[in-house]
Length: 162
Image 1 (cartoon, helix red, strand yellow):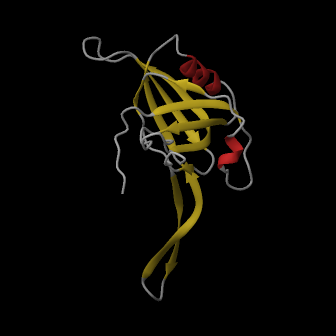
Image 2 (cartoon, helix red, strand yellow; image 1 turned 180 degrees about the vertical axis):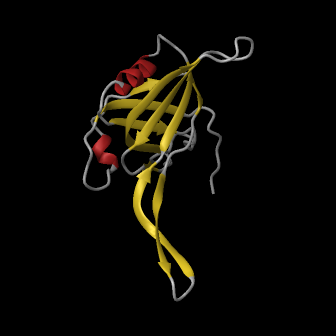
Image 3 (cartoon, one colour; image 1 turned 60 degrees about the vertical axis):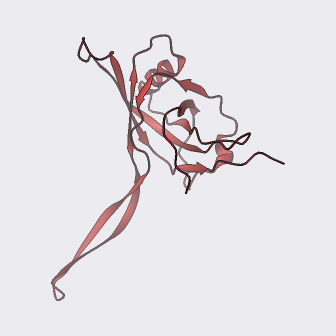
């Protein structure tokens, strides 16, 4: 098992991508022009959750649960406000639309000379809300909610080519 800290993680927003009937693959993101989002302080959680389907089995005196549809997380990304950051500006602009955008996370786990692991997905930016925190202890923040509307494509870290 390879463990790593999220310190040094990079986050990017790409262009709009349409919903697909089935899962995305790494190749679906190949033509994206990525803009890095700076100033992130909290990375939040990403992933899928299955909805719970329940049925009552009266004779067995048991409620049986099983998985239904899969739902992407609401990814809460918190950044210190940076009016000069093109990535934050892109997220704020994306919030004003109804479109899904490509999102890329690059972890700081590359082997020497190799490539890092990544996560790719599409998300609708549902919130871009300024948080004017404690004046003595915190910088003003912008809180983004990204509604993940696809599977999470996992790209594993790779060793350098021989």
